[in-house]
Image (cartoon, rainbow, N blue to C red; front, side):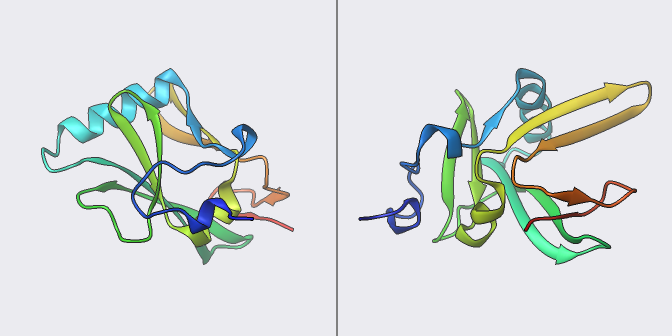
Length: 127
């Protein structure tokens, strides 16, 4: 049986619907706005790195060129999310949202795999 991680690089991943990454309309609008400021941007990358007081944190960036091992999730007409296979195991089924309150603008990661988060909200843990 093949898994999502066995798929050809740089193509949409065939995973169960519940494991797909998604983004709210607010998040899509925000990310596409960021991409408009960088004409070379072709997508949005999410990585999970070991750090912080709870063990893991999200690292995001605009994609200029896909990596050979990227798993690519089209979440809107003009937006694709790129994830490396290792990070994908931590964020299966995650929804990206965006919150604007007063002067604060923040990308929110609604990750069903998170079991605890630090008080500052910068890092999380997964059992």
